[in-house]
Length: 255
Ligand SMILES: NC(=O)c1ccc[n+]([C@@H]2O[C@H](COP(=O)([O-])OP(=O)(O)OC[C@H]3O[C@@H](n4cnc5c(N)ncnc54)[C@H](OP(=O)(O)O)[C@@H]3O)[C@@H](O)[C@H]2O)c1
Image 1 (cartoon, rainbow, N blue to C red):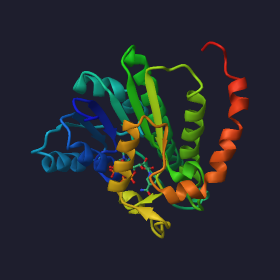
Image 2 (image 1 turned 45 degrees about the vertical axis):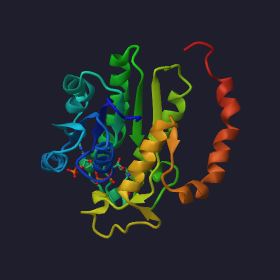
Image 3 (image 1 turned 180 degrees about the vertical axis):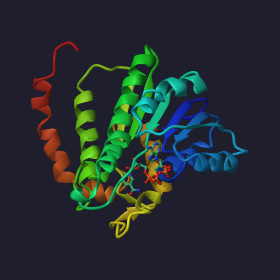
Image 4 (image 1 turned 90 degrees about the horizontal axis):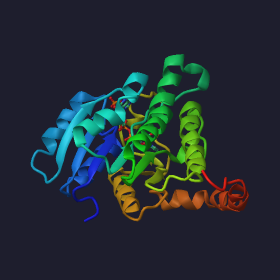
């Protein structure tokens, strides 16, 4: 029973992949803190999960706002006492030509998709001391390959990928970091963007959530919920391993 008695934080939990994670975890006697800016969605989640083994709490935070990002782990710790698993899942995408997005739209994508997950990890490392924890970031297939009209979004997700690659060469023994690379997933993600087609292939948020939890159990560092996508980028993955000896050569002896 891997998630039994675990204290778990999930951001972007009111909808899509985050909500699917909460629903999957409701099978276990665990404590979950669901964070989102959508208070109505969080309250609905509370109602839906009224009679489950899980103890669910909710917290409204806007992760596009720096001062609220800085409160992320302190407020979560206040609610849960300790954190064993942290899903940095909230994310936003604006569809359209780069020049069509104003500064606020560009900034929001960077704050929610990139700054919040990285700062959340920083805060976890400060408070964890000797406690082990898993930190799971929902990146995207676009961390690996770009798509037209998603320049800012893909930039924020690709930066997470490179961050994780460097971080893993540092000495952080108590921290298990895993990145998730979903392909198009049928969530609210594509709503509200005129002319934004759902790219083929696509999958359900439940399938993504199940793949994530299975990978957490196995303590993987990367999860590709679509096997087809993993095959499509196989040469890229091989190239990454070719660089490994070079990276190890530059690894400091002590860090
Ligand atoms: N769906 C896909 O095709 C796809 C593919 C690859 C990766 N992903 C990634 O998967 C993650 C989850 O996305 P999803 O598909 O589940 O989308 P979703 O259904 O839109 O869910 C995202 C949740 O995050 C919340 N959120 C947005 N901005 C926030 C903010 N500033 N502060 C706090 N919460 C905020 C949203 O609230 P509101 O509803 O109020 O905006 C929503 O509840 C994201 O990181 C996304 O980039 C999605």
